[in-house]
Image (cartoon, rainbow, N blue to C red; front, side, top):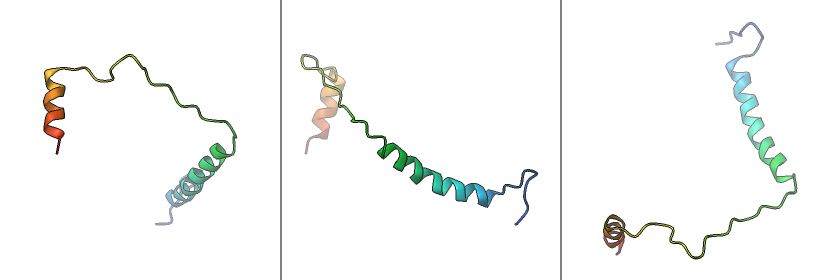
Length: 63
């Protein structure tokens, strides 16, 4: 269980590093200070096409 590879890293060392790297990446992303912008939705266009298939799905999804 405690066998190591040639460079001295084991699977357990990798898992320890992976467990601490993810929260550090989130913290670094939160501290960058850039403001997120939302994309504007198209106003004159429909988002799904009005076909027989979509109408049948929407009719079956109603409660």
